Length: 548
Image (cartoon, rainbow, N blue to C red; front, top):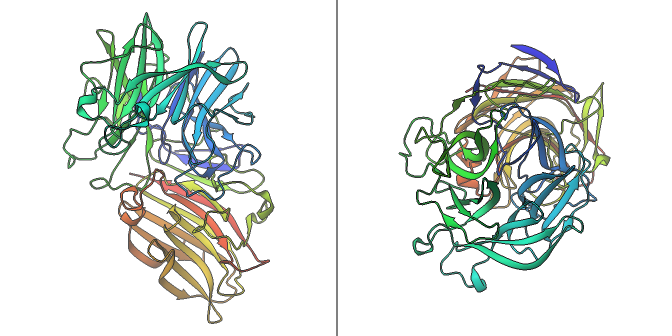
């Protein structure tokens, strides 16, 4: 065990994983749709964030295992916001690339203006305002830099916008002008449907083009981002095709394995290949860790696996059928100082003193007028009328659930004035799939309450309530996740935990039940439930511990 302090005032305690092994997932919790680029000895990786803000985290690594978040691409409301959007909309599938001193991120703002590109000289930021690409119709754009030409490649509609079956899509490309950041020339279709159109392949998406020797490779996901997910590969002698599929596609999938196998990794795909420090090829991709069948609450996570080249074709995870939770790491591990752990078992404390950890998430935008940080009180939230059940910007600050078995706790200081005022901790999946452990008032008495979101009534239902001593001051709250069960505790004296309710249904928070593309967050949250209020709630710290 060791202790260290982040610049963002996070006190960390964690176990170092074994030397010379990759530990999967390399980014635990809701970190889907990874894209990675290599710049000299450095690696930079981005993920989807949907309607959370700031959007698109940027991670840095020297060894593909130890990742440090160095910033966010969308970190200013002037770039964009997601107000009015459901949690699972917003930003889909970013891609990061580098050329001649400039970093590029392309992405899709779904349901809005569509595809865009932003640039930066430093991957930590600041990133530019978005340049919108109205000609690029579809999702999942990425850039490819050939010797003298750049291309933008993306998922798009079926030919003539006439799909032969549900999920029939194409991969298309334009030339891309790196000076004007606009497309030029005519759109070209690279892939129709997928590997074999006669078999009705669905959702060819997440394309990346790269060059090796004299071949251009087009790597893409196929089958949809669930249990049928896969990764396929094509190649051509020209960047614009014609592309021929590998006869042994897919190069990665888990869909044919026994779903009842022990500790499965499933839904693997949306990969990008990158050269490792040893000169060999590795794949970064999304997958999930279900605790039962297809139930998981941590969302789609970032995994790594080795790649072997066979007769000019890459194969991911070549030595096994099932993806592994660890792989040999045939080069020196490089641990970055003052870095929060992202894989294996770990614990940390976030202390709210002067700056926010860049991994903390708001809903849809950031507004510093309703929160304050100081050494005495920690994080103080104004009670806003907005609730987590709407599509606005409530007083909500969250951190990803990164293990199926874990606990999160906080120290709350709050004196509610009426029944509409509530403050406490959420375990939150989306607008109506959440549990809320909070302090409030009922019939003049201060109470501790547990609510469950209700998709049916578009509100929340009271599961448990307990009267507590009035003006008790500081109150500790704790939520414990144990796969498909969640337990809720409180303490009026340090660590003297008492049970409010145990054995609450965790599958309610799963992607299979709630739908969408995100994972669960532990969130500090205060609301006046639609009523005006001048009250405030303070949170001293946020503790997290995951051990599986």
